[in-house]
Length: 127
Image 1 (cartoon, one colour):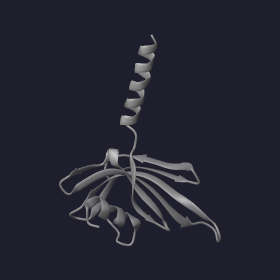
Image 2 (cartoon, rainbow, N blue to C red; image 1 turned 90 degrees about the vertical axis):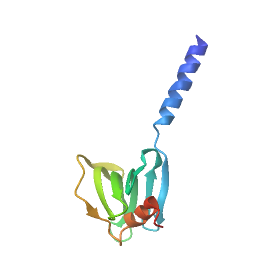
Image 3 (cartoon, rainbow, N blue to C red; image 1 turned 180 degrees about the vertical axis):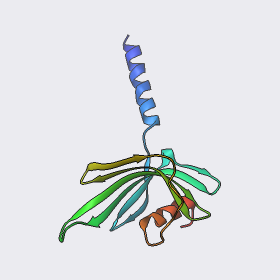
Image 4 (cartoon, helix red, strand yellow; image 1 turned 45 degrees about the horizontal axis):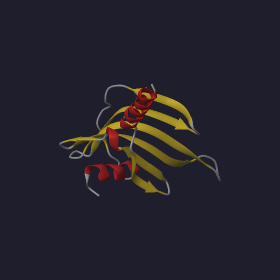
């Protein structure tokens, strides 16, 4: 009986670990960071699909800051330098304020003045 319980607990741990996110930083600066979930990463030709965790510092009131935290699933087209988003969770001060899932959004140009461009360069191998 002890062997069955031990085997079941080991198997449960292996199955849980197999589906765990593997976050890897692809952008870091004083304004924040972007990490990619390597367990959700896939590449098909010029298309890179992944989940991102974005934590960017934005001004709140003079002398203090808040953090904009987002979990986003998106596909980047490394040839056209555009992306489409398929889901997003948005939190302020640790409280979820928006959850969205749906079909892909329209193609959006990657803004060269935003941190997402640095993440896209790392994911597309254009660093």
